[in-house]
Image (cartoon, rainbow, N blue to C red; front, top):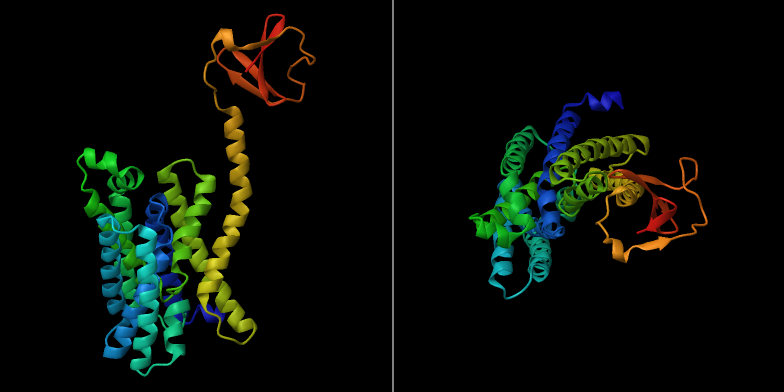
Length: 334
């Protein structure tokens, strides 16, 4: 394994995975906030047509994929904002058309399905020095835009109407996020693949949401988790290739590693949210609507076994689904 890591092609693949894993969740965070988590999947299928055009014309599949994916992203926003159909239908139209067009054009180009599969599921053997430079440039643009424009992009994603009233150019920022998503898809196609890139954009974000309470925290954690998943999945794929003398695409291992992280984080998130609900201060209840128990069957105290929650100048105890506050010789039940 160490000998494989010393190979130039593997080092290029690791750098590409690092950049991809860092950039993809940055855009994915805004897509998840806008409830358009499947946009990356749709753009991935559109980019298949771009790859096929590159194979047909003999030009770089990366740049033709970028061009076609960006056009597709703008079309999605235009169709969605026109109001003639919703975002899901717009994605579906490009979803099927992009994949069908890509397969058809690949056949016209005289290329085999194996050549196209390198872009569909990723391949550590196809990352050239030129690909690495392109990935570094585009990945840097994605990260800088996602972090540098965080206040504006978050405002537009959270509440477009309020953002519009506040003077933000909502249409411009919506199109910008769509374009960044399209560029992300093409950046990631050599490592995770076009058909699985959406998972790298969404799953780390979903995992981060289980552990973080703020948007900034979610963004930072998602980018870190994406980086770990991309690099770790690539290493796992390389190890399996050596272990079983086979060619294992890195895309599936990257996605499965991301899903494993979500599986671990989800129970922790459920527990943390439950604890926050129990410890959160509750709204003040007028005295005339409080239920007073003159003869409470249980005496609360430090050793009673029930959760104790400090509340202003007293302590509430959670008991039988209610919060009991000691008040003289009785308890107020909230």
